[in-house]
View 1 (cartoon, rainbow, N blue to C red):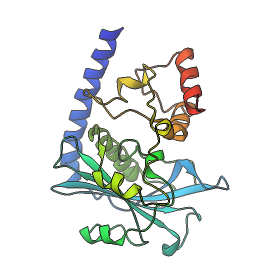
View 2: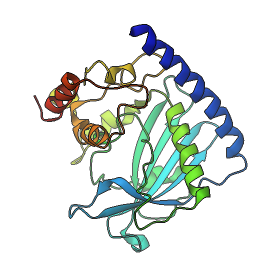
View 3: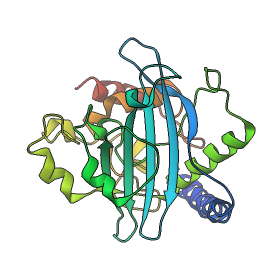
View 4: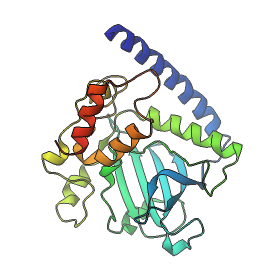
Length: 253
């Protein structure tokens, strides 16, 4: 069984490298800016849809993912949008990542935006255990994405997979001390790792597929991914015992 998983992992790695090469070639010809989706996962407090507009910029020393997020419907005004950025530093190994909440504005990156930060409305790490997450549109929702947009979303998701394991920028731990809403909760129980065997094939700190251990504070994202069938990925399955382990973990046991 172990050899079978290793073979599958090797095939996935090869696929990711090939897909990444294709993406790099296509990225020179395609515009990956201002792609609007209705989120499959995120909901407002009232249970209504959340709408995201996403842009990706590949720079020499960094990848920048920017997003305008609306909790006020698909036609919210510009000043009602939350503007967020995830900056992946490509000069470090492993790459480190910094999360920014910025005052409302267009999805145009400049280094000066670091000085335009505003307090987080929610802790980023609750959902983002390893930098940018896969983009999951609700294609049956209010936003009707074109075929071209669906192709771009698929390519962006391949790019996200190629980031591999990311570690938080050291500034987050320094800044969290004084923040009312921190980037990440720092208690021991909040950072207990999920050690379910099937999950740790990828969600661990070493190896080709490493994406960092999932922590207890990621419980909402873990629960959604399992209940929606997005995890485990194709080629893997979880046993009834593991599903119970995940359930107990997300419930705090």
